[in-house]
Image (tube, rainbow, N blue to C red; front, side, top):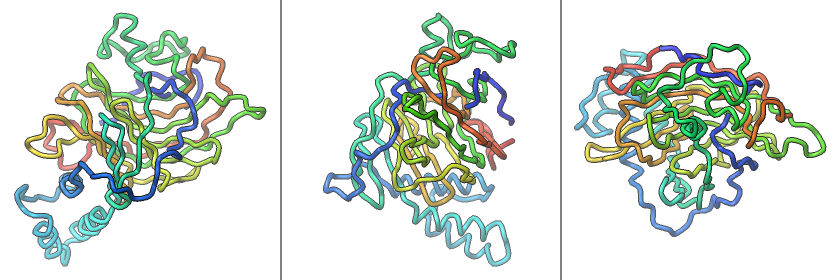
Length: 333
C-alpha cells in the first residue's frame, strides 16, 4: 500500500514539537548505573525476533523457545537461502542494543549500557491540537486540493515546514523504508537557531497522543541521532550517530503488544539489526491508527516565510506499510 500525500507545506522538509532546541541527549549519562531496570529485555527481544520471522514469512510456533526456532532455521538454512538470511538477522537481533523509554517517567535503559538517565520532556508537541482547536477531528482532515495552501489551511502548519505523507485512520501498525538522511543548511549570524530538522515515522490514533521514531538533527555538530518519542518524552541516542547523506536501510517502526496479557502497545524502532529502540505507549487499541512519514524543519510560530534553514536531498525509498488485521506475511506495498 503506497503512502498518500496528506499535506505539503510551503518549504521542503514538520515536526510535532514546538520546543525547538538542539535535540541532543548530552545530559543523559551513557555510563551504567545501579538503578534497577524495570523492563524484561529478553521478552522484548523475543517480540522483535518473532516479528522478524512474521515479516519474512517464516512459519513458527508461538510456544517454541527462541533456541528451538533457531535450531529449526539452522536445519533449513542448509538448503534454503532465505532461511539462512533470516537466521543471520535473528542472530544479530539477539546481540543488538535494546534501549527502552518509559513514557510515564522518562527513564531510559539499555540492555548493554544500563540506566541512561532521563529523556527530554516536551510540554507542547501535539500536531492534532492545531486541528482540534478548530473543532475538527483528525479523520476529517482531507488531502488538500490547493497547490499552494496557507499555513492556516494545513494540518499542523504553524509547527514548521514539512513534507508529510499520511494514510487514513485505518489501523496501520507498521512501516519500513530505506532512508537517506538530508544535508541541513542554516544561515550565519545565529539566524535560525530556533529551527530543528527531523526525519521520522509516526502513528496517530483517531484521538489521543501518538508516537514517533526516526532521526533528529544536531545542528551544533552536524550529525543525526536516532530517537523515539512517546508520552511527552523523547530520547535521542548519542551512541548511534549518523552523518548527512548516510543511508539507513530497513528502518522499521511498528506497534506490538509485548505479551498476551499486555493491555497497551509498545512502539519499536528497528535500525537494521543492531539497534532497537522501544517505548511504552498509552495505546490500548490500534484499529484506528494512521501512519505517516515526515521530513521537516520545525519552528514554533511558523508563518509560511520565517524559516531560513534548508533540508536537502532527503529520500524515502521502498516504503511499505502493514495493517493490524492483515495476515501479514510481510510489509505490503
